[in-house]
Length: 199
Image (cartoon, helix red, strand yellow):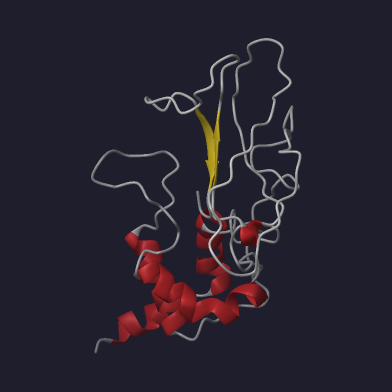
């Protein structure tokens, strides 16, 4: 086997190569208080998961991206490019080295505490707690929550913030016009926002 590829594999480090990829593609969900089951914001957090990360990116289970790439290009596409997958694979195969201790890894991106869209102008709570049983199947739950709006409003961004993310599989929010009992518009126009891990 040629020497050069071996040297290239050994040169991949967390600080130099992997932290920027994780910051760009993973940390929005994999940080304290978010949907990811573990934080990937620092080497000490990432290192124990190195082999699992390698497997998840090779099989393209992570980052979560459900859109079919054969049908359009999307600005928010989180899929890893092949060079990013190759770098993660090479890093894990090399023993997941941190790299030069004097070379500080780039800090993870900053997020407003608790919000990905910035500070909201309005927070609407469903107004009730729901007890999730430890076992069994929970049927769909529907909550009707008044917005408090007294006039039409433009919504620039919306975000769902479950308090117990480990217990919430997904949430879908629809708008219901006053006096209209049907909130499921056949054309999808009543959909406001959804939540699921990685979405």
